Picture 1 (spheres, one colour):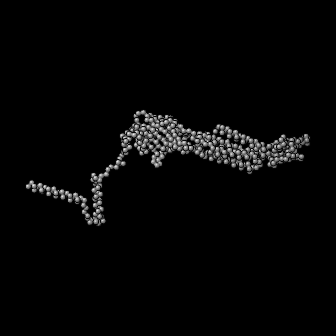
Picture 2 (cartoon, rainbow, N blue to C red):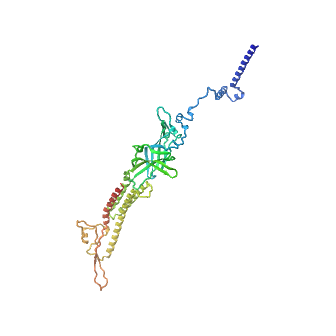
Picture 3 (cartoon, rainbow, N blue to C red):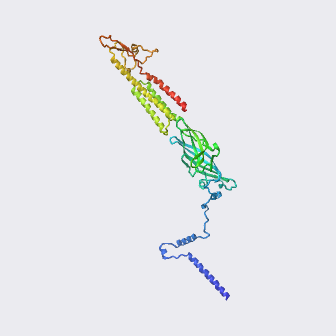
Length: 478
């Protein structure tokens, strides 16, 4: 009986195993109904979908290993223990001020604008400090270098440029930022910046001026109690490219200084200064301003040698020189800021303008005196009853006299034999009043008028005065 029961038990186990195998196969079989065929599906497509569904449910064999590149922390950040510290606080918070050294390398001094009173400079700005939170073990004592992505996760000094108008960090082809961390926690933070900053210029000696500008660096949030800003190597902290040059200025020197800046609402801050001195090139202004102005003044003197009767020649010459000087003055002031004080170039141009204008007035005086002279001569000729034996005086517009006429008028000949342009008018005035009075008397009146005197004196006075002005001007401003 026991043997029979064991046989029956074995048969039941085999039967049960066969039923389970059939059920497991049935899970993978698909019943094809007429609806499926109507949809145009194929058996192998359905079989593929079933297999894909099985893989989606997953088995330990088909599981993928996790992507280590998508981990929240990279290996370097794990080594620096970024998540173990609060980098919103400065290093050594609550203790003494953290020293931050700075050095600068000036790459280029791009432009100087007199109208906007600013300058544009491109420089490499480097910061040095120590943050023990970034220290890491290293067998070879080598530093690690990072780009700008790590800068956003750690503490860096919050520097800004005082009195800057525009500034930006270069980002071609990526952000020009470098971060280097040494095993003991010393940090070098470098970035390439172009900044346009204000420069208060004094144009009282323009264009013979020298300008001093400065770029000022300061922490925005941390006072001197939290951050001590200093030049890392003194004056040697400032390096300049030897190829830096400007079209209008000569760069005389660069130097550094450090001062404290006070704000009434926040306190005292360390401020670093990059000072540089610029001297303007004068040769450009000599060609464009001084030489043309001087030539216009000399051109106005030509009218002193032109006959005073040549009105169409002397008047246009004077007007042309005046208008040209006005154009030069307007052109110079158009490229300059509208300052309320007088510049050195204004003194030169306006004095030159006065000389040109005086030459026009000089001819106006000559022409006026000539007209008055002719009017007096005409009246005198009308009053003379008889001029027998006396040479008639010629009009001022008739040119010079012959030697015989001059001798007949009064024998006025100079010692060296040269004739002087003189007119001697001998008038005989007779008045007969009453028959009981004395006979008519004659009075001889001589009048000497020289209308060339103004031109003769102007030929020497004008050049001498202008040369004297130039000597005084260049001795003061050069």
